[in-house]
Image (cartoon, rainbow, N blue to C red; front, side, top):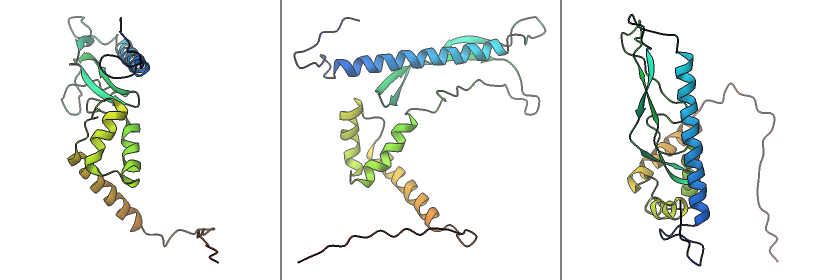
Length: 185
């Protein structure tokens, strides 16, 4: 890939060449990990065959490309597909392969979700999340102000549940008190 770099070290798209190299490396590593996961799954079930002698679990191309927001920025992923023709005897439904690395619903890394409450606690308003993350990650990371508001309500519910938990059966050995003493003259 030939890239023209401006004098300030940015590419024509406005991002840093270093950031683009990191994103490309992350994309390649994720693609290789997904391929290895699918190959291991298929190899594990290679002996299962139907009555005509055909394999029950085979590769079936790729899913549509999707962007996944990671700490390296938005990375486009093309996950491999698996055609699993086995049927679960208990439910009667076909078994499905689901990646442990990149589940079908995953659009952002768990690390991105962990940083959001910290940004909120440090005073970043819900309307400021999109521009802030766009500058940091190179995309809006799929976080609209409505998403941030929904996450805030979830955090508040988690906090309320934490504060209302029953501590009558718990013995604590230490109690820590913190304070500030100002010596005013």
